[in-house]
Image (tube, rainbow, N blue to C red; front, side):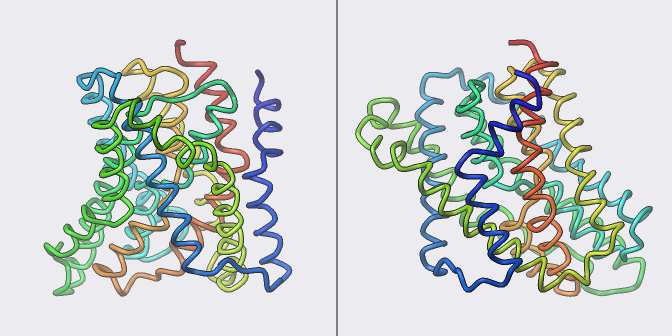
Length: 328
C-alpha cells in the first residue's frame, strides 16, 4: 500500500476525525468540553489497556530479544534532546533553559501517540509486538535527565545555584503515574498471559477504540485551546521545529530499526516513539525542576503542533517507510 492510501486510511479513521472535531470546536471557541474527571478516567483506561494487552502478548515472546531493543530505546531517548537542543539554539533564539526543556519534551515520548500508532498498525495489517510497550516506558525518563543536565550546565555557567539535578526530580521521572500504570499493567498481563486476557477481553478489547475516540476528542479540544491561548508564544522558527524535529527523530528511529533488524510493525512503532513529544511526564518533571522555563511554550508546541502532525500525517508516513525499508 502506498503512502497516500495509508494516509487516507488513517485520516478517515474515527479516532482521527474525532480529534479534528475537538480541534475545530476549540478553534471556533465552542463550549464543548469533556469533564476533567472523565478525561482522567479515559487516560487511565487507555494506558492500562495497552499495557495489559502488551504484557499478554509478551507471554509468548522471547524476553531475551527485548534487551537490545530496550537499550536502543534508552539511547534514542537520551540522545535526541542533544540534537534538538542544538537545533533550537541555532534556529529559534530561545534561551538555553527553554531550549533544554523543549528538547527534553521531544526526546521523551507521547504514550497517546504510541497507542494511536499501535491501533493504526493493527488496522493497516502491520501490527507491532506487545513488547514495544516496555520500550515506550523505557523511553520516558532518559530524555528528562538529558534535558536537566543541559539546563544545569547553562545555569551553572550563569552562576545560578539551582543548577543541580535533585533526587526528587529523578524520582518524579521514574515514578510518573502513567508510567507506573503502564509498566504495572504490562507485568500483570505478562503474568496472566493469554488465559488472563480472555477473561477481560470485553473490557480491554471490545470498547478500546470507542474510548480512544472520546479521548482524542478531548485531546483535540486541549490542543486547539492551547493554540488559541498561547499562539503569540509560537514564533515561526519554533513552529518549524515542531514540524521538522519529528521527521528527524523518525529517520533516526528508522536507521536504528534497520540496524537491529526490526520488523516493519515494530519499526513503525519505534519511529513513532522517536518522533513524538511528551505532554504528560516531561511537563510534570520540568515544572518541578525548572520552574523558570516557559511551560506553556513547550506544552503548546508538543501538543498543539507535533501531536496533530503525528496523528494525522506522521503515523501513516512512518508505517509506509517501515514497510518499504525494513524486512518482513
